[in-house]
Structures are given as C-alpha cells and as structure tokens.
Image (tube, rainbow, N blue to C red; front, top):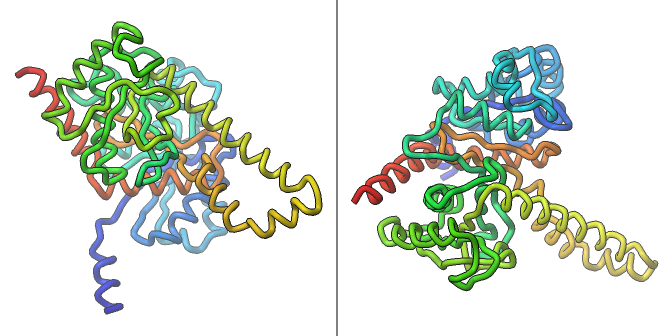
Length: 356
C-alpha cells in the first residue's frame, strides 16, 4: 500500500515555478524562506529563482533541502515598489521580474510568482505574455475569507485597472467562474455584481448594462447569477464570485486587510488586560489560533492575474515566508489544473456566445 502511494506521487506532473526573488518589502530572505517551506511540503516542485546570483546562492546554501529543487537565473536589476510602470517597461529588461515572466512565456515554467510592484508586474505581464484574444482589460482576482463551504469567495478586479466597462465586467465574471472551478473546485459558482444596493434601479449605467450581459450569458456558461450584491455580501455564502472595477475592489481589499489586522490586535490587547483575561486566553488558545488562522491575510496571500496567455500570481508586497508559501501553494494548484488553458477556452466560448 505504501509503495503504491509513493508510485502515485512519483507519477504526478512536475510543477516548475518561476519566482521573482528580488521583489517585495522583505526581499530575497523572505522569498527563499517561503520557497523552502513549500519545498518541504511538496517534493514534486522545481523552482527557478530570478535575481542576484550571489545573494540567492548564499541564502540557498543554508537550506540543504533546496539543493536539488532550485536553480538560479542571474538578473542584475531590481524593480522597486516606487518605480512607475511606464519607466519599468522601457528599462526593466534585465530585471528579476522580466526574467521570471520570460520563463513562463517560453514555456520553461508553469506559473510566475512575484511579490514586487503590482503596476510594473501587470505592465510587464501584458507585454511579455500578451492578453488573451477577446480580452480588453485583464483583472486581478483574490481569495476572500467567507462563510461559504470552501471558506473563501473570489473578488475581482482588485487593482489591475481602475476603469471597467460593462463588457469588461462580463469578462471578469466569466474568468472568475473559471477560477472558482479550478482554484476552489466549485462546479456551479454563484456570481454577484458589486453595487451600492441590491435593488435593480441602483448604481451606474455600466453596472446595469453589465447586469444584462451577465444574466444573458449565465445559462450558457454553467454558473448562476444572483444579481447585485453589497459590500456586506463579500464575506457571505450568498455568492462565490464578486465582480467589480479595480478601484472599488482595491479599496475593499485594503479595508478588509486593515480590519482583520485591527481585530487581531484588539483581541491581543483584550486578553492581556488583566491576569484573569490572560488566564482566559490560555484556556481559549486553540480557538484563538483557529480564528487567527482564518483571518490572517498572509494565509490567503496571492492575487491571480486573469486574462493573460500564462498564469501569474502576485503575492503581497509585505509578504513574509508564510505569505510567499501561500502564494506558491495557490500557483501549484492552478498549474495542476491547467488553469491557463481552461480560462482561454472559457473566454473563447464567451466570444462564441456573444456572436450568436
């Protein structure tokens, strides 16, 4: 029995991940530590780290488990968080970010993972990987802790583009459906359109047009449309995919992360207030750790760029080793499900529906 399990593991598809090792606030140490955590849990992974060869080799040499599953590609330049996307596109060809994307474009890696500058990463991704045919605006999708059966909802767009026309919102909905199926294994996702109220007469003109388009396509695309949803529904089990423009989505995301951090800090203060409260925290330690795990933004770290000819996972810029490992875990799941090919097929099917 044990031998059969080992043979099954050995027959699994080898996943190759292209990692921008110089991105993020904490730099290469956090990235390499996150890679090491992932490698210890999944021996079927191979990592290509892009960045300063001397720094990376020194960090990797301290972790023996990485010797057989990591290779380093030297990239001399670093994209800073303050760099403008327009500047990066012109001068970033020798950067670790560009090199990481190039490996996905050439088919040498399955997924690119980066903690770097979001705007620069999206701009470079659009240039190197190109948009899928029929896609006007790519989107960034994130997992949001919720009361659903799988524990998460998908929200998109959360910052790829501050604007979104009705047709863009339709494409976001359909790409989100594909993500829900391949990332969360939801067979018939429920889609909601974020608005200032659930009443049909509320909201901007483009939202009403998008409502009609999504409703028209839901029967042909194996998902259900619940209509308009409000901010309070993002964490509910009423919906699996929440569609919005990048400006609204990014504000909601940062607000949610800040609220989660506030709740965590307030709980720590409350349980440290008196000797009796400290005793109560000891008695409730298991439940508190479970709660902390559920609301910890690091453990659901990783925004997926949708609408490109390749899969890119954007980790939070402040991600530590836990956050990097979470982004890698998401990248692996998408690679195992051939996500890039499936989302391309879904976009193509939507195009056919519209033509009819």
